[in-house]
Amino acid sequence: MINHFCKTPLWEASRTLAAVAGGRQPAETVITGAQLVNVCTSEILPDTGVAISCGRIALVGDVTRCIGPETTVIDAEGQYIAPGFLDGHIHVESSMLTVGQYARAVIPHGTVGIYMDPHEIANVLGLEGVACMAEEAKGTPLKTMITTPSCVPAVPGFEDTGSFIGTEDVAAAMEWDSVVGLGEMMNFPGILSGDGHAHGIVGETLKAGKIPTGHYSLPETEAGLNAYAAAGLRCCHESTRAEDALAKMRLGMYAQLREGSAWHDLHEVAKAITEHRVDTRFACLISDDTHPHTLVEQGHLDHILRRALEEGIDPVTAIQMVTINTAQCFQMDHELGSIAPGKCADIVFLKDLAGMQVTRVLIDGEAVAENGRMTAEIPAYPYPDWARDTMHVGGAVTAETFAVSSQGRERAEVRVIEVIPARVGSYERRAVLEARDGRLSADTGRDILKAAVLERHRKTGTVGRGFVKGFGIRSGAMASTVAHDAHNLLVVGADDGDMALAANTLIGCGGGMTVVRGGRVLGVVPLPVAGLMNADKTAEEMSAAVAALEKAWEEIGCEMVSPFMTMALLSLACLPELRLTNRGLVDCRTFSFVPLLCEPQ
Image (cartoon, rainbow, N blue to C red; front, side, top):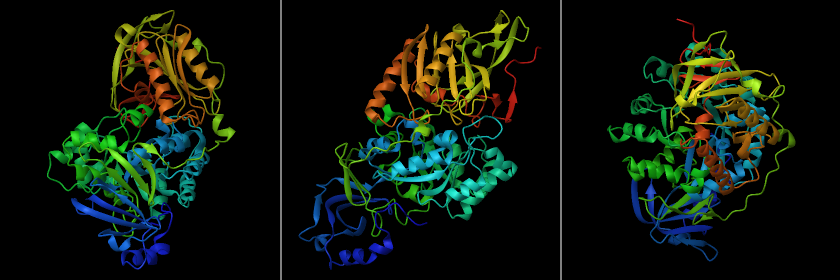
């Protein structure tokens, strides 16, 4: 695969690199006195130097002959150096930051490249929205490799999105220089059943010689997983049990072990490595979704590396899982993921391996961050007006919008979605609710809230209604346009009037997240770019804004970690067991609509 992510192609740099390595030409930059984390051989080499020219590595070892009068010499002073960290699966939009602000946040933590699946913005604005993010990324040092969104919508027929991506769209996107593969194929039922649309999208990726990435969330590791892998899906980040991750590695799939802000899977899936004597080349560490507070307070891949160490994974092995293993997953290890001659000079300096504290970051041989701060400039990118005008809800939203009929019953048994804190799954529960004036309401005494999803892209006026538990809210309501993956307007609450206020607050500000109670807005975080991101706020500013909003959550009774990220999955109709879209309740085990009210016994 041609690498468009280094400032100089290897075929243009090869003569210079050979001359530098041979001592016939001085290097532009050399590193001396480092302890090299050699991910190629899984060892640490003391007192090692690196010579750099043309943004690439010319020599690893004794750099004395590579130093000239104009050479920049960086004395590592005994610190460790490792390849720059690569996140193999990330949705930038989930940080609520645009690419430029995201780059500012993660590069100082050692992240030099991301494999970005922008299916959030694609569900709202299509490939035109993805192109905006790609254009913004060009102004950053961060190597932003795009995997073209595969499932827009996530599961066809179950929700309404702002766009549609078909086989021809994927084929065209594979020609983009920034595209290296296909985003997570969430429609695993389509792959298993032989659906032409799903296989066509994967097929166009394979024809282009690029990498289809996976999303297999079933706890099944036999025929279904084999079929999925056989169709060409190379990796999967949906393992929540050690046996899931181990089965994928045994089948030659890359098991992407996830530790995001809300999905804390590493404690379980790390056991696939720590409790088994297996080669770890098919294991990667990824974030998937990261909250701005996590980026500011804990970091990015450096934080996940520390978590891996806490779970008993060896430091060098863990570093391999965010460098060479990730590069190999995308067949880019000939350019990225190791400190070796010819490779891109993407290097992180680490004070120690126990704390994974990053002190300096080089990308293409240029120092871009030192001691936790960016040193490279990133220009602002002006998102067009059409990317900021995405709230198109059909009709007025009032308390009546959220009414649920009891269908003439005095009491009715209903299906309830129970969320699981820090997990992506949900449970289907049943509850009997008493009717009042022919309607069913929330029951906060049993932690049962009302939920609704309003289509917000094409003014269809469709609304899906349901009930949810697990948030612990005693009053008020909250709403969000970050509602995977269609990103319609999602509202959860104890009172229909507050639910209407929450919805209208977001309609008025162009999208975002809000909490209300008693007819008063307690907090709001505007996300005007596609209703998903804020281009004008830094990670620190967004973290502060979201922290204030989480205090509002606490004020209405919720004690959950990253509650909006858990809430955002209520509408994702490809995760078991029960979900709610603008079209209604979806049983994600049988992939069929089910009624909210159960049949009377």
